[in-house]
Amino acid sequence: MPSKSTKVKLSPFVNEAPTNFSNPKEAAAMKKAFEKVRAQFGRTHFGRIAGEKISANTDFQSINPCNKKEVLGTFPNHTESEAEKALMAATEAFQSWQKVPVEKRAQYLFKAAALMRKRKHEFSAALGLEIGKNWGEADMETAEAIDFLEFYARDAFKYQGPQAVVKSPKWLGKEENQMIYIPLGVGVSLPPWNFPLAILGGMTLAPIVMGNTMVLKPSPDAPFIASMFMALMEEVKLPKGVLNLVYGGAEVGEALVSSPLTRFISFTGSKNVGLRINEVAAKTQPGQRWMKRLVAELGGKDAIIVDREADLDAAAQGVVQSAFGFSGQKCSACSRVLVDEKVYDKFLEKLVPKVETIKIGDAEQNAVMTSVSSEKAFKKVSEYIEIGKQEARLLTGGQYRNENGFFIEPTVFADVPKDARIAREEIFGPVLSIVKVKDLNEGLEVANSSEYGLTGGVFTKNKKKLERVREEMMVGNLYLNRKITGALVGVHPFGGFNMSGTDSKTGGKDYLLLFVQAKTITERIN
Ligand code: NAD
Image (cartoon, rainbow, N blue to C red; front, side, top):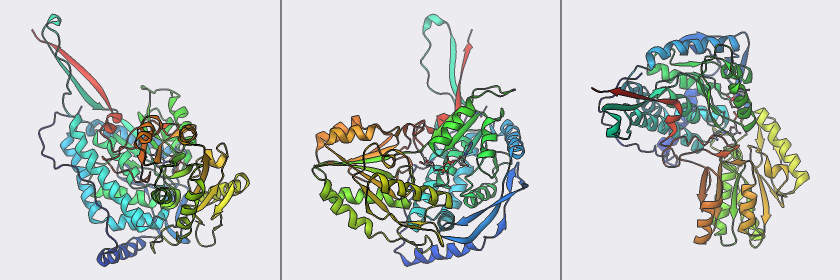
């Protein structure tokens, strides 16, 4: 049990500001960072179990999706046996880590945040080279990673020591009552590839700062960034075994989820994998002494409603930013626009030229739109484009090529039937479906008919309609008259409803409670 905390004075949390790359100094520093990261390419990497380097019988490579000839590194394909060893190391480390006071645990996060801030451009360059984020998108992600560390480290103090309970009534006799929070035990962190620094860092270190120990298995599409993250945590001297790292895909991930040693799972990824994990985690294994807790943040089919009373320029701008930022590869990305028939044609006239000016190129050259993240993503998204060509009217884009990297044009389909596959299924790429609706009533009906409920938005100048949308649009993060992406830690706690997950609200005031259990202690006083 963590010891009672002494008073510590903390500065208030402040979000990390974006870098201004129009400043030539910053641009030059960013270019240098690319060189520095590239100098680390070509190495063979290892997992980490209780601080020991761990290899495997087979390997896989991470490649630059904008230039597929470039190999970032070779990584071990770990299996069930390494998963079990990592969980055992975490179980052992938990014995001492749970007793480390919060002041000390938080310091590791503060130190890591400070180092990440110092090397911000290196982390951002790695995001460009491994998953194709342009400078601005990568910079925002690194800033978000720093924010998560700073935010959770501060928030952890709130849950230390006795929490408020109601005073016991006189007729109960004299007694003293306390409720305290204690950590859960050993957790597994399974992050997605699309925010392989910020989401990975947040969902792994939030449990750690609350006294749990972790096994991290990053996405096989972004192992290089995970190796940088692990090196950072070693540099701040996080005690051995508190964070363990294994590499690989679904096989090792599922071994971690099913092990009786696992107490909880912190997962962010697709709906199908999340539902599979939910099933596997629910099955009790021989020797298992607890019900596993699953925190799962899943996909979305996020809609923006464009009302007849909308500012159509602002709506077109907001839709383009939400749909094509990082090639639409954000869980929050807009993939459906539900446009009032009264302004449908006018809206399309404003939207198309904005989409057609988007330049596609290399992340390192800071193109507005770059490649998609991998060959797998390229195949999936291009298949959906072909489905879209059957289901609706191609308005712009629709071309894709993969000679050097995995490039897909920003693609817009109009006149999409509301029950078409491209209007219902998560595509996770630069493909936008426009659905014509009669009015706001139908807009809300179509928006809410999705099995998902992550982000959503509306553009209208009518205040009464905005009030109605606040109440009726069923999404975890609702945006009015602005883009629907770019949630800021602490400012926009993030998480979705229904098949978008357990609504854990990352970067929110309750998130850390997901990684503790409450214990009530009552003492009779004579
Ligand atoms: P994914 O579901 O394919 O993989 C996520 C993680 O789970 C990876 O580490 C993967 O290796 C692992 N995994 C795969 N199969 C597994 C299994 N059977 N058992 C255990 N682990 C397994 O997702 P992805 O393609 O990496 O990421 C994109 C998805 O993530 C999209 O659907 C996107 O919407 C979603 N996402 C959601 C949020 C959110 O906050 N709601 C944020 C980012 C991404």
